[in-house]
Image 1 (cartoon, rainbow, N blue to C red):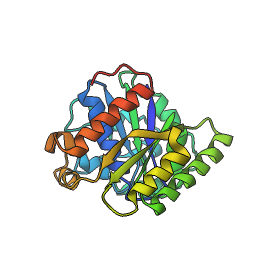
Image 2: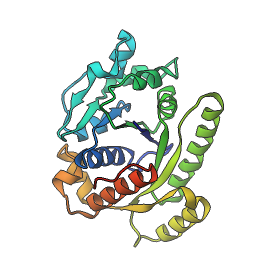
Image 3: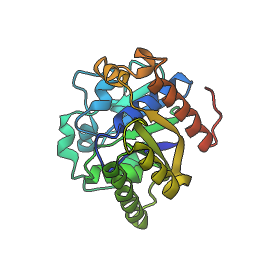
Image 4: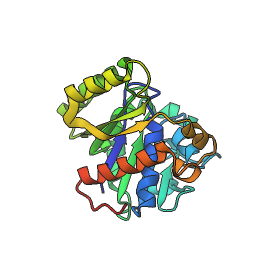
Length: 250
């Protein structure tokens, strides 16, 4: 059961969109998948059709219970969710950084993938996600300031690995790519030349369809299945499976 975390020190780089789209793509392909929303803004939760309050990680932490007790079904068959809420604000200063990893290990073996969605702020809860996961996916918008977030995360991962057996970088995913915009091509080339071995071949284009999908609380495969964004995320899912050396069902 690969445990993935989608993270970046910069906001607005499609972390949640990537989490939701990858989770949905895996589920649609037949893989039983669990998304764990650790962001108090709960964008992954609402994007998957859960708009009313549900218990979140805070309740599990305080009760000493299991993640399985708060898992809910989403609008996508085979895709389940540990929802988030504003209550997670009170869990940002998590004292035991290995708590989440221990809970993830106790999840039912029926799940073939677990994906953790994180907030942009690097709180102890975010660090605990890096410790809980095996692989990190870093979404990056090809903008100079966003690229800096990659190097910040790489430094944090290196520091975390010195103390914990934490996640390694599976790959960097270029998101919101608008190649016609001035400077975008140069940033993409720079990133691929410096970190080419880490950068996924797939690029996720900027898409006007994605905000519509978010507003409808459904993955883009349901709202705009033939859009450039949906097709790109499907390619990304296939590339990820190949990188993990898992049979591709797509």
